[in-house]
Image (cartoon, rainbow, N blue to C red; front, side, top):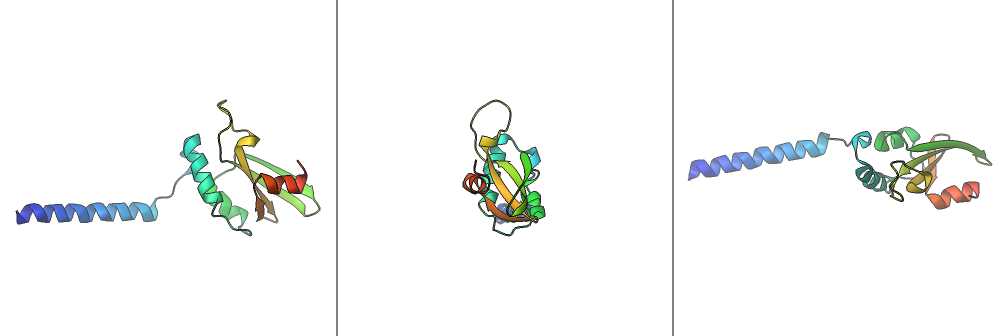
Length: 123
């Protein structure tokens, strides 16, 4: 009885150590996710972004964008990275209407979302 209980305790401790280790050291790779997983992942991390986040940090967290563009307006040169966040049409392609835009000036995030994009470029 004592031996079985000891084995069970040791097994639980090992399981807990492996679980905690994976939580601490595993980082998700957006490039290997399915489109559905990536949408959830992108929504989660975009929701945690803060104004002023550097472009390199966004790329580290979210991976490469699905679509990107650069434009100029009174703010100067603006880089827009579009990340897939919602499903519209099952056509095997990510289109602009399935993404959330992140807007950067001088490599710093200053706005995101369709409303911010439309306010900057009137579209």
